[in-house]
Length: 90
Image (cartoon, rainbow, N blue to C red):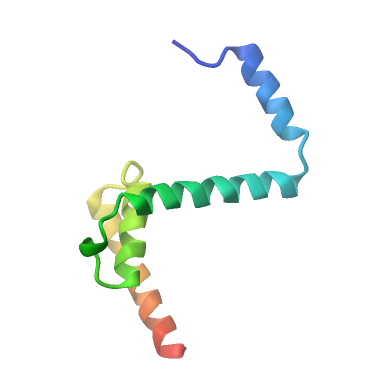
């Protein structure tokens, strides 16, 4: 089953494209913020110790369908290294 129908999909596409690029970016940012809030709500407060641990857990939940655990590990290491570098520079 394909939902929506091609005519509805075309109408939706046209409606989105009629908005300015800035409006489309604002919409995307808003949807991302909403998704982050929903994901954050599902992470128990006692399951992370530092803000970077929380960020990494959000990353894992966002991208678990896109990366294997083995692929995520170098990314997580870079997130931690970047956070540590920023902490030292601040």
